[in-house]
Image (cartoon, rainbow, N blue to C red; front, side, top):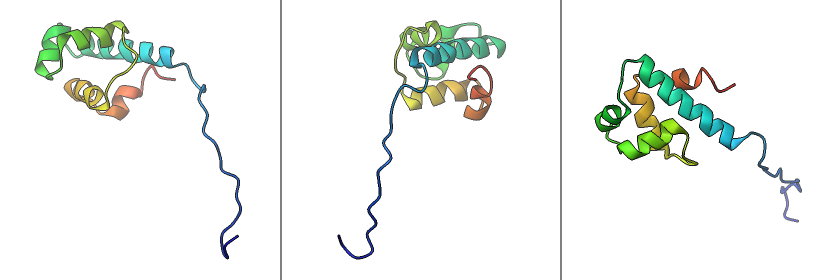
Length: 93
């Protein structure tokens, strides 16, 4: 072994610490809840305003998705006039 190199055991990452489907459902509910509370009555118009497809917005609000791009999620949160911290502060415990 080279001088100064320690022999350490590598920590391994693992999956299964939370329910992904439950998280996506919470995300879906939160998007719809906040949109309505903020006075955006139409998901279609909201999607148009923030420049995402209305079909995608419908999927995000119905929970009929299993992936969302970070940029899209940030557009939604920004369009809801919130920060990510504010958005995730409720409903994700």
